Image (tube, rainbow, N blue to C red; front, side):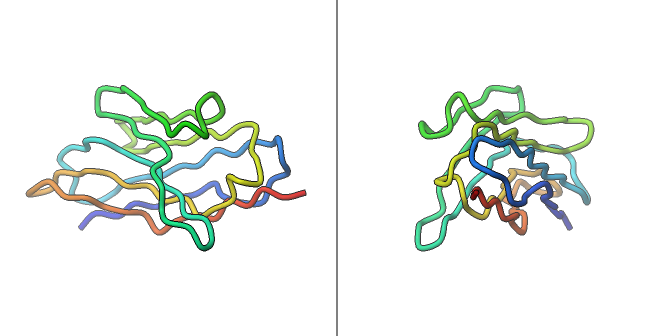
Length: 118
């Protein structure tokens, strides 16, 4: 069994910052690509940022220069540093990881709410 547990969401004013964490636990042999998604009310879930096992990163255009994805391979944790937050960033944020136990599989976290409002 593998679990992904997210933390760090909350209410923040426009222009503020938050740091999300997502820790994987369980019978993990190795972790491949880790990603952050978000889903705003009435919208489809969208990919926000990805980080490969080697550290290469990619971002959706709307967050480039404001968000930074990183990972700690010892702690099996992925982070999303979010700066200069805007109202449009309001959403439930989910992490997803490709994890090898006995086989490779995709695992999702439960989601954490981020609300940007004055």
